[in-house]
Image (tube, rainbow, N blue to C red; front, side, top):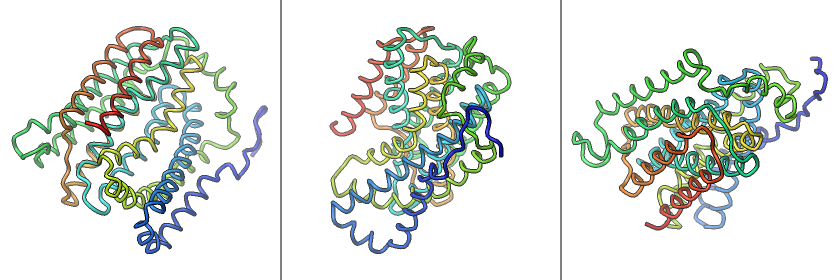
Length: 378
């Protein structure tokens, strides 16, 4: 294949995360008995869990790299949608695998979805707004895009994470079978409607005026997104990376449970770790976009990841629960509900203005700090 001017052939060793993921998976499968016995030692347990998390994070970064190349070739908003679906799909499948492996983890899906909202709407969004505002002062974006995301995120999060606390068909923060099926259908319908609006009906909502022309220059100026490989190659690598990554997530279930029990860590820590692993690479791309004064791309990535995560996780975990008979707890406790509502209201106020600044970023980061504090001390 000929290499275009200004491009260099990518070295084969750049795909080292794939080899590392396959090697780690083989080690986990072949040494399963030894790992199970050695996990009784706290040091070995932490080291093994750290290795799994590090390998998953490295592979997730590689997935984002391939998805980012495809995203720039597709253009906005379809490109950002692909990037979001690639990493969110990985997160959803990982949650389903871990949830259905080992001891019952009825709150894992709930904790992961809540962690996604807190991480993205407060943590990563706060960093993006703070750094972008620090470098560029005020940053413009398409107000209609943020409104479209938030009007979908609000009902999904409230119906999925708050409403189960107040239904009477079943005791506790759970839904009946009929309610779960209805919530699944509604989640899919909401997300499908959004996809139609984003890619067909109102594509212009998700593109800042004049951004299309600027994006060409930005893309040519970013060698990390310039690839000599074919589109088919990058699409194929997305699929190849996904399989060992999902299987590694299944291997992570047991040591993660053991760490939470042995060190008396909060149960929500498992969901937080899952969210951090899959969302960090994609969110770094969003922060870089904000630093390049492309806040619209940051909004599309960050808010899109929250919407996709909630919209896809709810129906899949409900399907796993119904198929396996495992208990599924979706309703948040009172403290988490307050933090969720506060974060959603703050996000709505943040994106009620046509420009963002460092003040808004600081507020979101302070809310993220409150979330971390409350996770460990209530």
